[in-house]
Length: 502
Image (tube, rainbow, N blue to C red):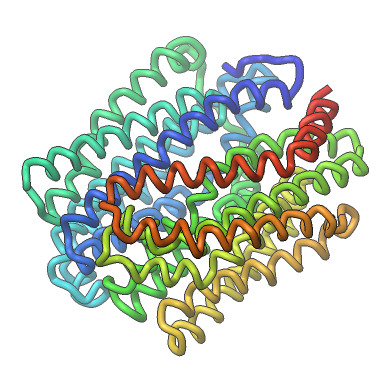
């Protein structure tokens, strides 16, 4: 079921092409959907919609007792052992667990929608939307079941391909509502569920024809008790590590919603959308980083791991600084281009924390090293600590600093947890290249001066459509300068990566 290649890194780099390309297409489509909706609905209505989506996302993470995290670990192992019966047994066990949890959560969301809307959302208009999304919760988990299987068998094309189709279907419905003037919170909610049915049918057809009929149809499902225990223990230990960033973001969102309400929460949601734009480009690179570290750790080549961390830390630090300066100075036109003038407050929140996003990427780098070197207990400790720190900081700062407090709590958590991970990974500690950083800081001072005093003024008289293309043009020139300034360093980095692959 899993395509064979000469090495793990070669396999991941080949399949990583589809992972990167399709992820890069999906993210802008999600932005287009949010932009269209934010233009038609009020701030409060959009806040309610994405509040409900936030809750559904959080519930989905807990809906299967985290067995899904075991698929990517055990299915390749079963494949190597030629035990399709175990693979079928694991899938059947996972599906049975989910049927129970899906049903209970669906009943709670659908039949208690009025009570939840009145007492939690503090808005009676949320009740019909919550009922619609109770069906979305039911069906999205079935969709994710197949998507997670594709991920487990390392078929990144099908995994991201079916997700791309689902997002495209949602966008088509949103465009239909947008251009035919059926502007309504309820109608937009149907966009998430109506086309999901078609996505499920396509995903199941691909699963049946490509895998079930070929490999699993005639195998008898088996799963031994010791193996079942091992699967459950692995799921519990790895869950918080894998879902950490999603859980932390949802904790922030839910606390803002409960303490401040849907209107303020939508400003915060837009801020998260803006501040996560660099992730679209940089996060897939982290996925390519993981298998190389895993392979080197298996060979106990710790010095090479330290060298790789030095290279990645050095380059990601500088790239993130360039993103931070660009977004800090052009935050106002960027927020206005994407979401309109009524959401300008989102850029204020983004300016408050964008300069600290570097700690997020440094933390992610350490998290991947922890995962690839099998420090499972340490990762669990870090995530539980980060959740506690994040909750306490949000509780204190939101009360005193409004939405800015949530942003402040987030980047303070990044810094604290990064320090903890550096302590745990002391054998891989590497110094910062201050000469390299200093050279780029001088370039950023010059670029920042030009952006602030000349480029920013040009956006003020531009319509949104022209401003969008002008922002893209400015960004291309801006990062082209970065490439020219650091060309020799980037060439050296590519040579190191090529040497590691060999």
